[in-house]
Image (spheres, rainbow, N blue to C red):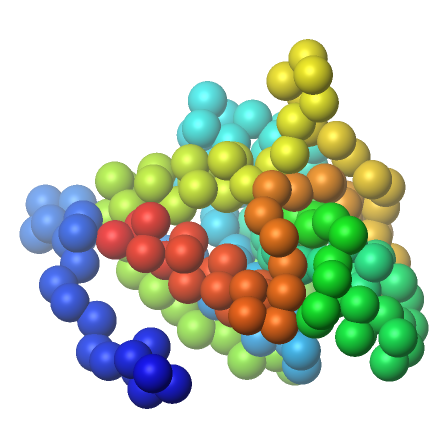
Length: 178
């Protein structure tokens, strides 16, 4: 069962055709956390309107995780155990990067992934669908992030747990992208 997730991927659902320029996204690993980075100008505002919260960004990094663990500057063991066993809520954390991915995250592990235009659109739809919305359909901002000047937490869909982490969310996003 543990090795089932380690099988080789099948063919992409939306391969980059020889006639199109690939769109690059980035998978970024920061210690315990992973995030996806998309070039701001590659994002169709109709598919991810929340990008407009970061008008000066060149790229957007988005990650998903437990609300309390993610929003606490120095979470302790109790917060970690609560996140793993009974998370009260999840959040999206979006950072507006004012420069290139490799310059902004100079010490992170970064993987560049080429996508077709269709694959990028499906990934952006997946991200947009993760935002939790209030009764009027608006996203629910929770405030800026610590350590990043242009960042924001938003209440998110999904139940975080030891078996459904940011890596699971990233995997689902990459599957959506084909």
